[in-house]
Length: 163
Length: 163
DNA sequence: TTTATAACAGACATATAAATCTGATATTAA
DNA sequence: TTAATATCAGATTTATATGTCTGTTATAAA
Image (cartoon, rainbow over the protein chains, first blue to last red):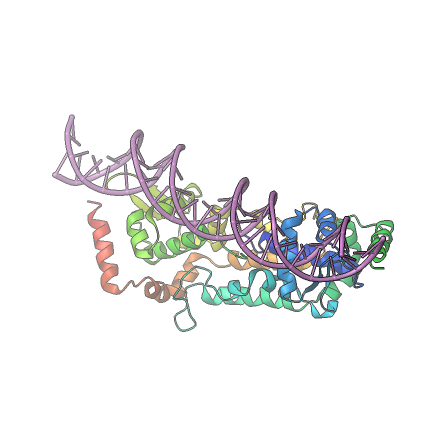
């Protein structure tokens, strides 16, 4: 199967985009997020843990615990999420799978692929979550069925858990 | 794991590039090619069969049988090989995995990804095997360790099988 | 016609990614 | 201090892609 992002990567992007809508340091539990995104809870939990290792989210244990974004939105790029989950391997590996493919002895598709790969990296690097959220907040709400009532409710619920 | 091409796709590209060096209607057996490319024979055979279904290669059974390119080099694009093996799905599917992602109700990354996807498609479409071979024949020979002696030998061997 | 050799077809096995489960640990409200 | 509830860690299961095996069919040389 030809793919770009792994399933893990997709779900990580979904989760972080979801958190970006709120972005107010309230902690959302893995259960909360998994229900909203319609994702298996345990799988999401593992993904969030990987993101926590890379400081993209912060985790808090215990009764009022959960996950919240670990950095300002303008410091999180899409590429950071991809790297946190799947690593940089894809940006180094030869398309054709030739182990001996190097700059000195490139495979027949080396140059063409190099351009493509650099472009993917550039596109994923140039935009931060801040820009994406500002541009797409309505889309994100829409695709996750977050209406204003639900938003207020969720936030007040989260905050109630805090005191 | 984030990938671009499946293993099958990689090997298909390798095999077709290999055939493009010769490109003289001689039939190479799956065993021949698998040894040269250092690929499992049975796995390659399956891949070549998929390529045969899409007329990218032609297969011939029996004693002097094997596989040869099914079209002129200038009529085979990289994208044709990708499609033959992995289909067009990747060029239609949403990056984030949202099933509801459409033009009318796009996901937050829809536009950005659309551009990238179109570009990948374009790059794989714009060049045919003819151009790649003409530009990279030495690279292909080098990476497969095809020296001139081996080339002449392989061709005469293939032709001997024919009469 | 016989024999050798190739693709072909489909079942089977293995490796890896995806998903689930169980129990331990940390945190906080009461 | 206790109970509730969250993450965390690792084993286990499931699904899918990858790789292997076995026997059949087609083709052509001898």
